[in-house]
Image (cartoon, rainbow, N blue to C red; front, side, top):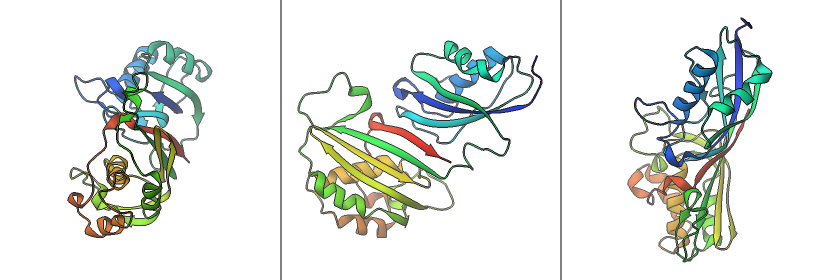
Length: 249
């Protein structure tokens, strides 16, 4: 038996369609809860899997990073990934697993996060991708959206793009990159920042689509930021188009 205390770093892929987000909630299927159940079955101990980002219900991930501390788990580190993946449902997979120094922390060690949001503007529903995109059959001016997206780059107060439920002390965040990529009928938004407020990416996307359909011009972004009021921005985009792509450490 390996009685050594180990800190394990996980790289996770998941389809969040059938889950109530990352955070464990009693009586609900969540990503964190499902992972913790798998660890309990394998190691015979209750653990807390700490994720870098608390993704919302219906949101996906290709680059969620998490850590867990194991004490007296009989399974060697080199066997953990395969053993856990056998226990996890088809929608969740551990893409990489490694033992790390105790100083590593999935949240506090994070330097930046990258999210991607996908929209399909085709008049017909993309049935094979419908769980991983927002079907929005409207002609969108991706050039205007890109101009607006560039105005978000930098250190800003993003109160206007945060959900009212966000209770964090500071709404200041730094967006390092914000791009609108068009390959009709697909439009993809890529946003990298040092951190995000609750629903921030989805609120940004909803606002950019208002600009793309001609309701506002790109300069409207400046007015929205200055307002520091959620009501000044556009509607929230639905969750299924959002994917956590990468965490940088």
